[in-house]
Image 1 (cartoon, rainbow, N blue to C red):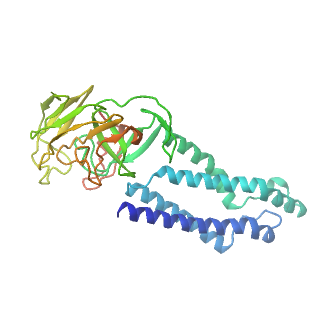
Image 2 (cartoon, rainbow, N blue to C red):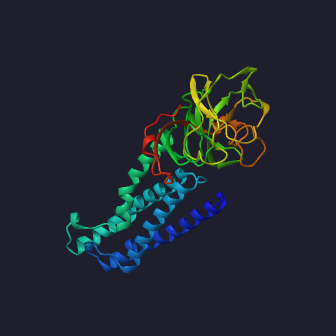
Image 3 (cartoon, rainbow, N blue to C red):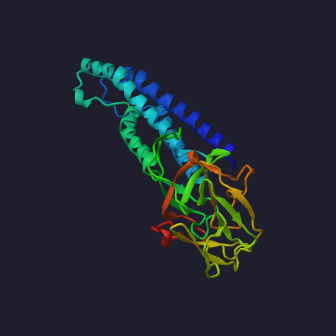
Length: 341
């Protein structure tokens, strides 16, 4: 599924959810007071119950969409759902609760026995939870799923990781406006960033070039920064996921030192992307640890390649693996808790 098709699917789910919410609210705020003036009934009519179950199914489909595909900002969904819950709760408190209690009093129902419509109960319960989750995701930690091989052997396709959002600055959700600068990216950091040609897509690569650097890659996969070679120590033959495939079978690895980071890289079978690049002010140059199978800053000008990444598109620093659900060889439980270097 493409990013465009995935976004259209999510928009369709949103319209369906709005229709279900409208049915539930119309029943709870307009029909229920006539049907149950005492406000004590726990039952819902068939249409409202069907709408409620449909809403749960839509929420499950939306969550599946978020985990399965990468081109939608989950913060947008949290903001939309949180705002809807807050508006429903506020409207009920301002307009409908007083009428509900007045009708119940006329029917002789004690105040503490009056039941809220189900939609209002859900909104009141979920609103603070959504706000807490949104704050954590926006300013502290956000989960991401690795969707490709470009960071092997450091990260495998299917790894779920946590990204520290506070490392380089606190940004508002959805708009990504910087409100507080907290740190500076360091050479060798593994960073999640928004793809400059399409900010709906997140990429993860290793930071190689800082603003003003000259980065060169030769035919032997040796990286030079400002004319000096980045230290590489030969490592063992790659053994790991997909090592039976042609492009990974029997390929070499190396230990590379970028700044304070010592990490493994690998050289998949295939052409080496060579060249020399100068990093503009306010931008960063990224490469994948899977050097010959990574669309990174070396591939400038292509729609699915990042080119030079502006500072505003940095999302956060990858810090830890918390799960892998790649079922080809069974869940990779041994990767859980690995720090990302």
